[in-house]
Amino acid sequence: QQQVKQSPQSLIVQKGGIPIINCAYENTAFDYFPWYQQFPGKGPALLIAIRPDVSEKKEGRFTISFNKSAKQFSLHIMDSQPGDSATYFCAARGWGGCTSYGKLTFGQGTILTVHP
Amino acid sequence: DGGITQSPKYLFRKEGQNVTLSCEQNLNHDAMYWYRQDPGQGLRLIYYSQIVNDFQKGDIAEGYSVSREKKESFPLTVTSAQKNPTAFYLCASSDGANTGELFFGEGSRLTVL
Image (cartoon, one colour):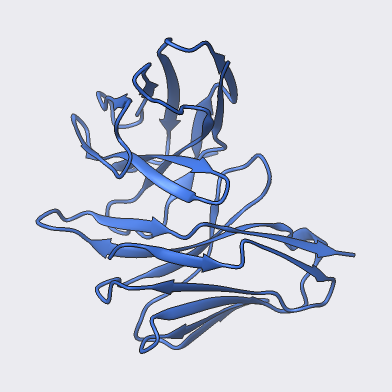
């Protein structure tokens, strides 16, 4: 199963709060889990990524927590700011059939709003 | 500056017309992709190309066509066979060595009237 399920669909927090976005997957062959951030009217950009042999990765205020046994991973944003308001996509990379192409499957996206 | 350039940014089309969206990259990336973005559905892969003169169907290729005659260009044609073409279209590229990091353009919003 190639799906990645993301929740919640939208999230509103106050400045300084810690929004958490969750993703779940079925395919145990996925080997790379990036998060993308998209501002209105722009294309997504890579924010942070993790591999399944690591349980946590932190870059600045952004942290990915990864639970391999549960097949879940989540994004935490510490001390959230209004400038973090954006759409966030989780993704997972799988390798299909006889090709060498590592295909990304994206979650449905989460619209985050951080109020001042 | 290196990056992905998509044009036009906004496009209106009448039903029954084909339309071509342009995508150019100067990152010297081998791989290029087209995604469709609809609210609540994430990004869905339309076509991808790992090398010049070769491309593969993604998950939702019906009603779309592409070409890859040059490394830096990967245009997408939305044909009249696409039943629900109104969407935000994103082009991306990646270094073939690491297909986990995609570099996206700013997108083209197509509206069918």
